[in-house]
Amino acid sequence: MSTADWRAKELTPGQLSERSGVAVSALHFYEREGLINSRRTSGNQRRYNRETLRRVAFIRISQRVGIPLSEIRHALDQLPEGRNPTRRDWESLSTLWRTDLDDRITQLIRLRDNLTGCIGCGCLSLGSCRIVNNQDHLGDDGPGARVLDVQLNCSSTQATC
Image 1: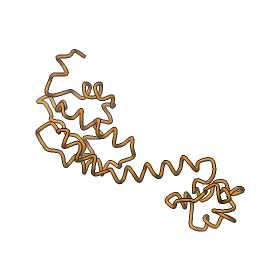
Image 2 (image 1 turned 90 degrees about the vertical axis):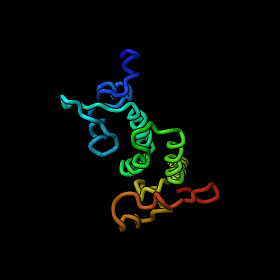
Image 3 (image 1 turned 120 degrees about the horizontal axis):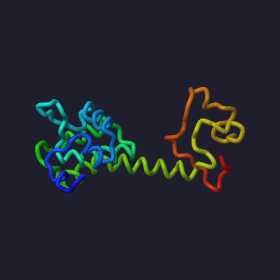
Image 4 (image 1 turned 30 degrees about the vertical axis):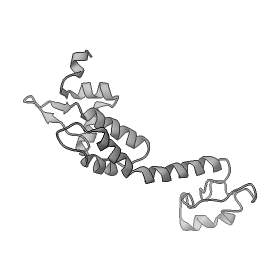
């Protein structure tokens, strides 16, 4: 694509897809979900404003860190209509999720540090997890992970899980 094409105020779905690295089908999905907008030409073809590139990048990064689409939509609804979002706009959005992201980081660190021992699965290693899930008592609470949200204290001063 030539440099002149990137100076255009509007992009076709193909151009937006190429520039953002997101499939055209994903762009259409984002539009159906109210995350991005387009206008229709007289020939019923979609055209996206250039600032949609930033929105798509924001959506993709947010998804990569596990933010649900409903929260992404709510955040994008805070951006101004009709003008390119400023750095301050993006900084305001990022502060909305800081606590949640810090909590996720803490949980991921805990998972990483306990991955070879006890991960709070409830328990996938029934034969070796006599401390946290003796005789599979957690299975009585139902299927799946039972204690992932509880901080397990499997330090070197205690028996390992």
